[in-house]
Length: 206
Image 1 (cartoon, rainbow, N blue to C red):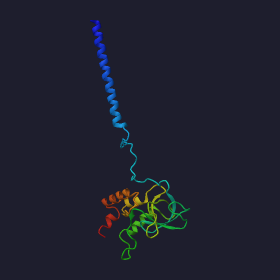
Image 2: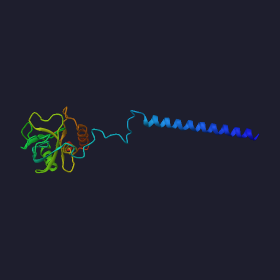
Image 3: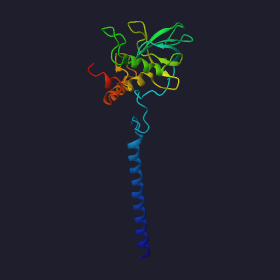
Image 4: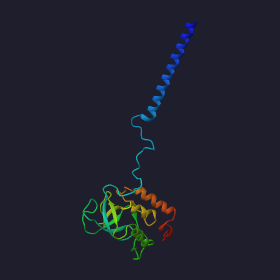
């Protein structure tokens, strides 16, 4: 009788051990399937930032220049201390900020368009005469007027094109193939329009 009970306990022990092994293998297989399969994309918590994430400072390769003066709300005259990847001369040159369009200082009738003077004043506040900017190009280097096409950052890391858009000083101007930061600029313009900031609160219909 005692031997029969021992045999029964051994069978129960083996059965329990068998099912424990099965459960461990099943759990391991599920974890591998959920997290460890080749080609599984990273989770949202570890995914790389979107290429359109808003810039937070001068990126690698940006060229420093000195601001001579703003020409209007979206262009400036600048001077490079030495030739670089954006400005290849040390003489003063004109640069045009990409992705945005400020009201014209000289409209069709020769007078400033609505918000033109304020847009230039906003640019002057961001980039006063004698200050430093850091410039980066896109696909096209020149516009039809010979101005360098650029994105600009201040020395404290503000994205000038985006700041002007967020303040409602400019409209969006998306021209292919120069679209490196266009999603950020579009979002900034749309938010300013929704909140009726700048020209969107004063120049609608004018």
